[in-house]
View 1 (tube, rainbow, N blue to C red):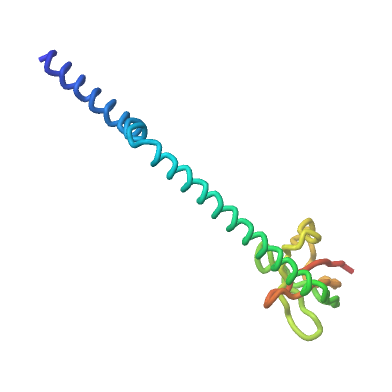
View 2: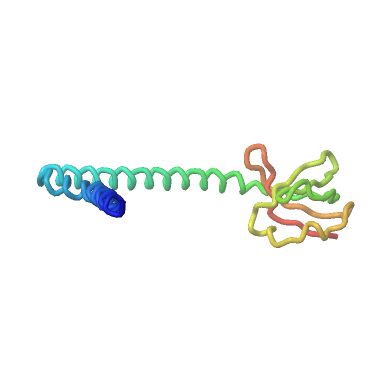
Length: 141
């Protein structure tokens, strides 16, 4: 019985080692031509990645330029603070409307909006990015 278990375990170990060693053996025996083709394929993949990264960088610059153009139109208004709509949005009442302002701009991310009392009079500075109003400054009176 012990011999049978020993033979089965030995055969299993040989099978595992053979399966693990197959990939290296195939690469070595396929020849230099295939290795050259593999290296060329890897270089092409690297070139494609660099091209994609360059295209992405160009697209990001275009978006930044569009944003910069839109952000030049800063709107300053007197308003009444309503409160936070969610962790990145506040609501204020202006003379004409209630507006939601995104607080994603680095200039206002340090402001503790939860500490501002409701109905507090504020002066807001914001710009429009598409349909969103981005808060760039707030002064509490």
